[in-house]
Structures are given as C-alpha cells and as structure tokens.
Length: 368
Image (cartoon, rainbow, N blue to C red; front, top):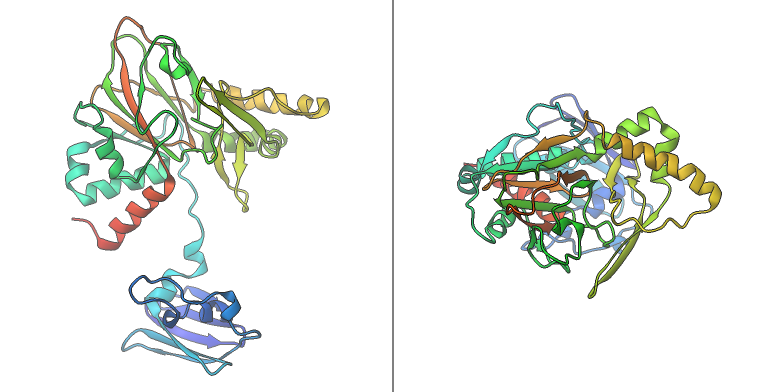
C-alpha cells in the first residue's frame, strides 16, 4: 500500500494511504517498534519499555516511493526506517478483532463437509477448512480413514494436542462403570467440555469410527449466538450470567478438578469471548440468597434458549466423518443410543494458538 500523504506532529505520525484511509502512529510506539531494535534471525525485540526515552517527540518524516520506506526522526537524534507495508498491516484498524460469524440452525453452510483427501493434500483447501473453523467455530471433514488414532494426523493440521487426565485421545463409547456420563449411552444435553479445568481446552475434535444405527445424533449450537440473543431479549439476565462466577467440578478415583468462571464471559470491549456451560459439572452454587434469587431465572432462561430449535443443529456423524469445534464457543451434545449397537467416537483437545498459527503460516506463504 503506497503512502499518499504524511503529517508529522510532536506526538504522532499520520499517514494517508493511496486508498484514502488514514492511520495514526504514536511517537513512542514507533520508537519501540523500530526494526533496528529486533534480532535479525528471530525477529524478537531487543529492548523493553525501560530503554525508551522519556518525553520522546517526532521531529520529522519522509516517504520514499522508490523503496517504500518511511523515515521518522526523533528528538533523541535517532532515525527509524519502516517499510510502508509493515506500517499499513499494523495500523490500529487492522488490529481490531473481527466479529464472530454467528450462526443458527438454518444458517447455510454450517453443516458443510470438507473433503479430508483435499484438505490433507492441498494447502488451499486446508486454509479454507481452518478459516471456516475460526470463523464459525465448527468445521466438518468427510472421508477420514476409519483407523484408530487417525485423528492425531488430522489434529496436526490444526495445532498441538493437549493431554489431560482422559489421555491424549479419549474414546467416547459406552463402557461399564464409566467415570463420565459421556461414556454411557445416555443422551447428553448441550454443553462445553471441561469447564472445571484451568485453562479450558480451546478446541475439540471428534472422529466417528463406528456410528451405530439407533440414536446417537450429534447436536451443536453457537453459544455466542445464544448469548447475544439473551443479551437482546433480557439484558439484565445477560449481565447476571456474565458477572457471576460459578464453580465447576469433576472428581473420580484418581482426579479432582475445579475452576470458577461465569457462564458467559465478556472481553474488555463487551464482546462475548467464551461460554462455559455444563449442567453435569456445575457445583452447588455458593451465592447469597438474594443473589440466588436473581441468578436462577437468568440461568433458566439461558438453558431454555439452548433448547430452542432455532439454534440447535442435529446431525448424525457417519463413520469416517470428523468434526472440529471451538469448545469455548460451540456447545455439543447427543441423543441417546442403543447400548447393544456399537457407537465409537475418538476425541482430543487442542488450543486456539495452534489454529491461529497454522492459518497465519498458510496465509503468509500462500496456498497451492
């Protein structure tokens, strides 16, 4: 992006780009991000805030269209050279988080199945799949080989597997004397996994190895969309759920885990950034009587919205299908299934950083 005009003030540099957009850069921010202050091989910064001059001001600047460099001179007699493209990429507007693509049961494309052979062989197809997962919080794959532990190869295309007390991979099937209702044939209401863990796993993968023939349909809902519906219909209930931490807990013979967090979590700018909902794992509430009297109506209203057909997608997972979803956004569940017929899914957890990293690398290098 070429520079059309530059304006230098003591405390800031303003750039008008060729498309007419304007960007402002703080004087100290520019000095802090001088490319000369970074190691050439790692790209990591060699200074910290204590090394920055106090009361720094900008003395002048110029742009060279020939090499695309912006030169900024400072009051401490230092001059910095910035690639114009770098400044454009790091403008404040570009750093603002894009809003999530909210969806309901009728939203086109939510159940789209990407092709595993294409995703595994083509970086362009892989990027489309990962971008769908990042935007919608859920993405399906079809034609994944029906092989035990195959999901580890799929997981490697997203990020790095997080091992928990359930192992690197966990088998979701009915077993005797299970330590979790997920390992029974019972129906499971919509929930997020492991809200009793700190931190909560960011992503979950489920690979169907054997579907069974009776019951066991998978259920999904966009928790962000449901939370925003609650905010619209009952702002007081929304604020009650975002402002009340509740305790979640899990215990078996070898493990005792607990954590405390609100059912709906907001970012500093007010956006919904996470949902933690699991009626199986919520511990007895430790609230005052008055607070209890306000919390339960809000909790019940959120629970009713999570049963609204407008939000809930129901789909059977056939053998060879895999679903990846954001465990801090998308709630999942299932209908009951027959214990006499085998139903076997394998699952694992990952974190968001791997997904973001893989997308950034594919975007940086282009796709075939």
